[in-house]
Image (cartoon, rainbow, N blue to C red; front, top):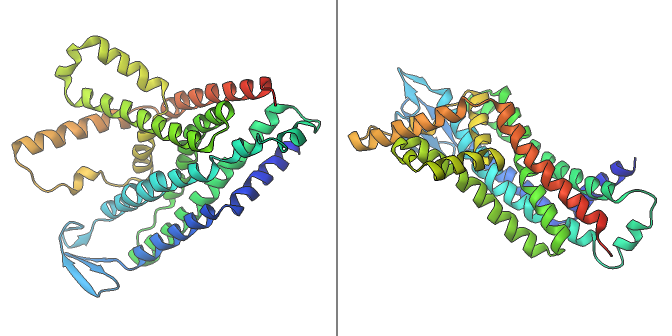
Length: 309
């Protein structure tokens, strides 16, 4: 019950922050924008048919390619709006939770209550994940309904994206929690968490580059070190691939028009690197990242438990 009370308190705190409503407005705006588009054979209608774009991108044999439309939903809408902008806003919204909790005058009241310090951290942590879960559920539900009723593309597996977005947010929020416990600075929390996110993505991008160009593997030390690093740090980019795989949507390379020999070679290399990542066991990919998250969170709890206030 003590942890539950902290979870509820954290969620209420997020409601008081205007950014919760900003994210809600963004979700509604994206759903409204989607509703203005429609697809016909060899044609894309914009703003309810105000103007049309002649295109056979989504048409094969006179029929609409629903897998390509699904790719727009999963990768270009869910990943960009929810997985990038949404998580960025959620991190900003929750960055001040721990610094505010540790302010003079407030932390003494909390510590005077008869429950251990680790419950304070865990309650706030889960409360922040709940905030992200609500926002992800709203976004996915709205875009799911628009895609179904407007585009006749029903993707029940699309709801799996909610869990992936919560997992991705949890990777980054563990870093946010640790930085908050050490610095008590909201600005520092946001900056370091963003740098960590860039670092996680950069490690995966470099790994993909080595897979695309096997000749680089002659640099054994760099290659082996990168492979180890990829397994240690959270694999944020893999979650987008898993979302596409689970929803059975198309790959972004399917949207690339015919290219010359050099361009085709780059596309083939990118597809090969992507296939290698898709063949990874999801439990191993997510599990190794959750171990990293658990280790970071345990350090934060340990530091908070020993901190003098």
